[in-house]
Image (spheres, each protein chain N blue to C red):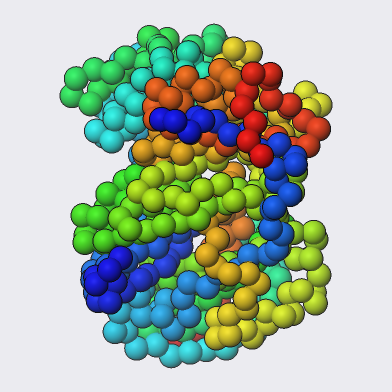
Length: 177
Length: 300
């Protein structure tokens, strides 16, 4: 091999670095639902959790519930399809979760992933630009050709989100049909 | 990439696995084939997670940590294979890549307590005995963690599953450990260790793997210093360097493991290690920290 086996990129060499947020859309909720439950017929329900339900879900899951509004769909035999979003320090992730009639997770699919740096993610205005745009009108923060090799980003927020959805199912959805 | 691209479809999916996000991109002749390949690849990754997770009390790793010092434990052939690779790399890196460094990771809080007891004395990967019939014994109580190699292995398994199911080309990215196959060209960027929202272009990856070790998501304060979850087996302590090290190699398993050894060896000592494995590395220190030792090669 003629090329050097190790390349040191010192400060001057990284001036060409690009700076930006990063966004990628994988699936629409409808596509994710069809992949998780092929051919199944769903009824959609808009649910507004009461303050008492919010407290009960938080107590059961150990995860704070941020939004009282829930977009949910269920089949005649009691399977649920839920779309949820979680907010990390720098990332904003929309995902879908399938739950079967016994209350077990049948699948989790990431619908979209966005990240930004510099504290903007806590900013309500920054988040507001995504409201209602989740997948229908994907936001182009940057070209999605980016393949980032980096330290592992934890998926703890999604794990917590799923705990919250399972508690929501056990306390509210299970008896709704 | 010529005529076949006209009759192929592309699919891009991501799921939370291996404690991170695993993204698959595939090109296959039909949507049905692409879908089947993606499902098989996610299943292969989930299998590696179930076998090799330190967090999972019933994984091969946890069973070994609890029992292998007392009697041989039978493991999945895949776990046996990863351990054999880990041991070969332990020798090839002069002991710098060592899967038996879990105790300091547990003590600092990177790994959970309780899946197995902490050994009283320090051992190394050389104390692992690989027996026939996928059995494993420890010469002394050990706490092993395959976190530094199994993620890369999971990526390799995902690529194998995609190919087996008819995918022509694609890219697997497990939280930054990547591998591309077929005619998939992936321009790869690394995050700057001092500003992870900024990216540096490294390479266009084709039929090759790349992994990165860096502290920005995982740093913890240990003994007053901000440290990365890279344990130096010579001191038994985590590294305090603010550095991003990427390694390109044939397989992601190799890239993943070599990253840790290159990190600890420094650029000069890492060069022969990389040459022997036909690998190469990028060394990105945060400005003002961990200046590379003299004699290393500077590329601007």
